[in-house]
Length: 235
Image 1 (cartoon, rainbow, N blue to C red):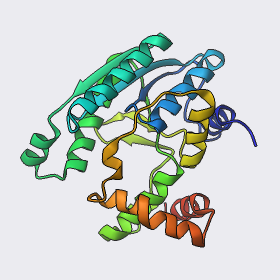
Image 2 (cartoon, rainbow, N blue to C red):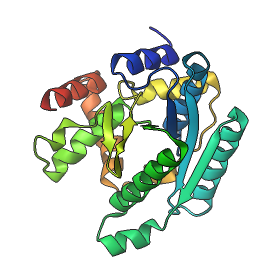
Image 3 (cartoon, helix red, strand yellow):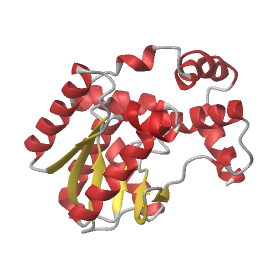
Image 4 (cartoon, helix red, strand yellow):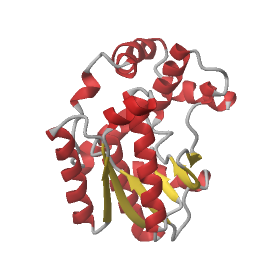
């Protein structure tokens, strides 16, 4: 099987996500998935002539841990010689003001920041690190919430930013399972931070990830292939 950078490049070309010479803003949280995305795109950028920049949004939800995430992203961008834009917001206050869940408030503030950073840096594309396991969890979460067929269609390889339709969100890792990203990180020496909140079972998505998905994978080991295929049909 081809190495991850080669597969990502093939995906970018197949879905026309990013063309040679284009500027692209990479959204980086400091976790495994986004740090792998940054590493892969940086490795490919030399031959593809992409103009990479980095953006990190500090949600201020985890105190010192949030600040440590930011520091890692800033240091990594500096080591790679990339421009790094950092934003932050009071997610809890935004949630109260707008009557949103913490998750939705964080998403709203994050996308607004990413769109503004992309405009400022002259990048039409914003690269996100969603992968195939995220697709599975998204489908299950929307089923639990009672979404209609449109909601069950899942994430797209490419879609307008919800904060600014002139900016495009691209997902180069959407066909890759989480395990492939973890394996790449270990082999390539990608440094990342673990979000301890991902282990807490108060959040629906964490319950799905840690309890439900492993059970489903026993029934269907190729879950990250079959579920995205279904979502593509629904879309």
